[in-house]
Image 1: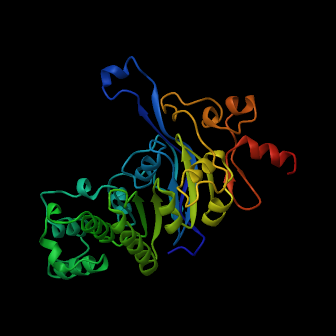
Image 2 (image 1 turned 180 degrees about the horizontal axis):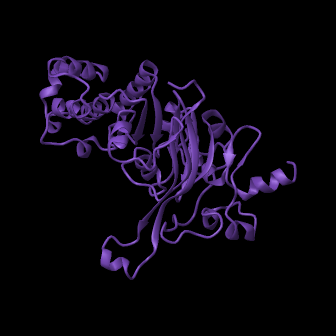
Image 3 (image 1 turned 120 degrees about the horizontal axis):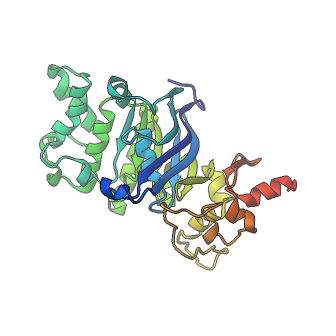
Length: 334
C-alpha cells in the first residue's frame, strides 16, 4: 500500500471520443466525434476520496469507466500505482480487476435478475479463484455482514430486495476481491433520501475499515461535500476546477463552479448573490472554441475566452482552475 498523499491513481491527458453515428455505414458520411472526455488530468492520493461533479453529459461516468478499464481510452494515461493501465489487456487486465472495482448507479439494472445475491457476490471469488468451495459460504456471509445484510439475503433475487438492499449487494460484490480503489458512480442517486444517508455512511465506514480509495461521481453537491476530501468539477468533457473540499465550497473560483453552488437550495433564498446560467450545455460533437464554458459564462473577459483554450493554473491556495480570468489576475500579480 502506498503512503498517504502518494497518488494511487493518476490521470494525464485522458481522452475518449465516440463516433457521432453508431451505424458503421453512417460513419462513412459523418466523421464527427463525440468528445465525451477531452484531455483531463488529476490524481487521487491513497486513502482519500475525490468527488467528481458536473451536469449530466459532462463526462463523469465515462471518466469512471475509463479508469476501471470498462472502456478503452482514445488517448492519455491512466496510472495505477505508477503503472500505465491504459494499454492492459488479457491476463494483465484481469489482474487489475482485483484492485479496481466499480459500484454502479442503478442497482436494479446492474444486478442480474436471474441470479441470487449469493451467486452474484460469489462470481468474482470464483473468477479470481480466491476462495475454496469449502470456505465459500462463510466468506459470502462475511461479505454480507460487512454491508449490513444477514446471510439469509444470499438466497434472494434482486426483485425480492429493496433499492437499498440491492445497492448493498452491489457493494458486497465490489468488495469480494478486496480492492484498493473503488469507483462509485452516483451510488445513491436511485435511492430514497432516507436510504441515501445509510449507504453513504456505509461507504465511509468501509473506507476507514479497509483503507479504501474512492472516486465518487455525483451531481448532488451536498452528497459530494459529505464524502469527499477533494472535488473536481467537469464541464463538457473537461475539468475546470479541482480543490480541496473546504476551499471549493467556501471560495469557488471558476464561474461554472460558482453557478453549481448557487443552485443549491438555501433556507433563505435572499441570502447571498446567486449566479444564474442561461442557455443549454453545447453539444459534445461540436464544442465551442476556446473555453468550452464561454457561451454561458457571465464573467467572460473578451475574445480570448472564445478563441483560446485556457491553460490550467494552480493558485496559492492550492486550487487548480482553468479560466482566463485567473490567468490574467496572476499575470497582473493580483
